[in-house]
Image (cartoon, rainbow, N blue to C red; front, side, top):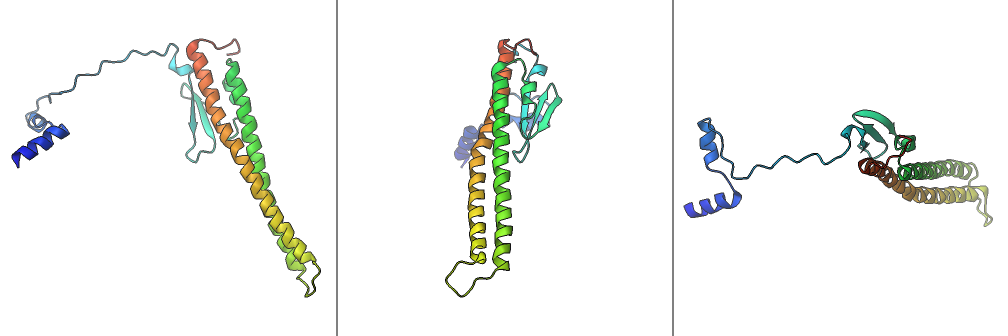
Length: 191
């Protein structure tokens, strides 16, 4: 039993001297070599670096430089101004803005179409109940409007999702391109 305990203690790396040393107010010996401090290899002041933080829900972001909040929005408005000086970052920021706005317009249009077609189509169907005859009535047309509008709206919403996902990726790419140009010393005169 004692051999098994020692094997477990050794395998887990439990330091048996630590509790004794703490009880006697002595420093605990460390078996690991101390990690040497790393030199700061960042050639520019950290306060110039852009930091992009997404919100907890994933919608919107906060862009900071040196602890100062530069932007706090959802559609990358002004991101191109924050990354001025890096041509590639400005291009990516503008593309991100376009994708996020396009995705939002498609999504909100789809949602509006779903709601409007449901309300309108069902209102027409309720106002004109079906006849016993075989001819289509306004009620049937109302149900057709509701069904067609819902399906079209859902398709619009689904088409908008890739635009929004690409916009989020491009936001990050723009900030990374700016920070890389900052590190490489390639920021233009516009900064």
